[in-house]
Length: 319
Image (cartoon, rainbow, N blue to C red):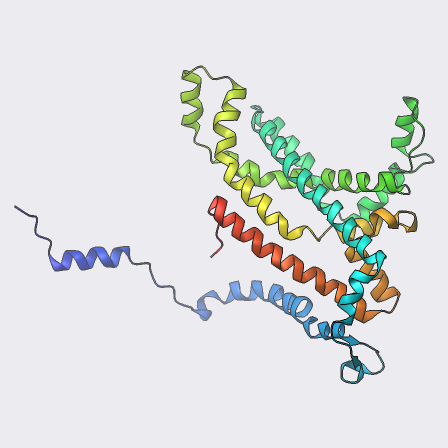
């Protein structure tokens, strides 16, 4: 005999599965709207407000003539980007520095999170976490001053330590062969602890029963990491790696601007610092705008690509 399903029962179950409707109630939620209002104003002011100024990229902009009176030159400023050897060098420097930063900022935090996850003394674990987080909250203005002092050729603590081992002084911030290395290591030191938060959160979600079962099977700690921990966090590693593609043209203006000097322009000058020097200091507003717009368009395409790859290989979606 087939079961009888009443119509009222079906309606009840259907309505239970249906997502509840949310109602916009400003009088009840106005404190939350007030909280988000400063962020909205700042976003509109600094992110959307300057957008009309991009028209300068298509003009030979003269401040005394304004947008309406300046000569329209079309894509000439964009063509100049690839004509100047200095521009090509800046783009190359940006790609090299960003690529190294992305690779090491993925590997080092992941290894650190795996090692910290193996620490069983909770107080020691919290102390290590706090110590490695601290540099993230310091600005590059402060850290730049600290690095200039400790890396100084005369009296810097690093060169004093090298001298103790019989190694001659190294001009970390004035030698093109060392400057990129200094940028990457200092950025890694500042950010690797904070970047590890994502991986530590992923590790906390691994089912403990898997480790208990592996112990019964005779697995040691290394085998547990290899066969349980790593496969469990691979999706979040893929998400972080793919989304970081969108930052490949952001080599870190704050860091480079506070550490570089004319001696290391050949290896350390990046797109953002070049736009600052050419646009604001050199008065070539149109060309600097074209370079900045070129960077933004490429970055947007890479962000879309990274988001698609994250969805394709790790099923990551924002919407």
